[in-house]
Amino acid sequence: GNNFRGLKNQIKRLTKEINKSDIIIYDSFKSIEKGIKEEKPVCFLAIEGADFLENKIERLQEIYDLGIRGLGLVHFSDNCIGKINTDVVSMVVRAKINKIQETKGGLTDFGREVVKEMNKLHMEIDLAHGSSEMIFDVLKISNQPVIVSHTGVRSIQDFSRYLTDEEIIAISQKGGLIGLWPFYFRGKGMKDMDDFIAHAKYLKNFVSVENIAFGSDANGLPGAMKGYKFEKDIFNIEKSLLNVGFDKKETSKIMGDNMIDF
Image (cartoon, rainbow, N blue to C red; front, side):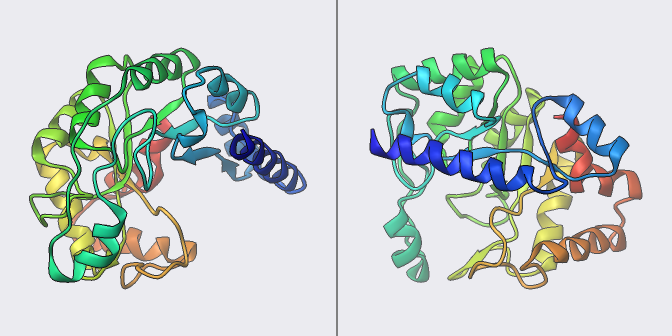
């Protein structure tokens, strides 16, 4: 209803502002080729949280027609598609006492329909914030790779927003991407560059550099990792990877090439 109308208006306003600049809005891989040729940045439009669908599958086509090419199935609350992996109250209030509660539950019937429709539209499926059951449900259905845009490795730190080894293997076996998230909040997450590097090394050795991406999430917000706060600090990440033994090709893959090829 009103929320969906508001979302469409936001997309239209954003698109209008972008079109005033030299930025190219991503439509297909040809957009990237154009950006490289003309030396212009390319903007990939995505939405985090599909609450706006409200069990109406036709809305996927509507946002696609407005330029949206990626969708995070859930965000801070359960919706008509499935379950989140971490209760927000638990994340904000209980993190300090190390009692974050992980939620349970997989894809709904409508969620399965959404995954199939996104495959038809060749939209990027983002499973960040999704429950473990939902991740495996999507992987069974989807005929294309998925991304978990901002997360980490749970074997390094027991944080419910991070992926288990089983999830990492399943995602990588389908050619998926795992975005490393430079975030730290109340004792959870990556507090500094050393932590970030530890997660990158783990994934390189456990699966492959081909499955690693940089998952900035949001810039300039409280909770940013030490050494990374704004987009200009991305060079700190690149430098740190090179300093610990990732070669130039591997570093380029993590910092963007894997995402371009995705």
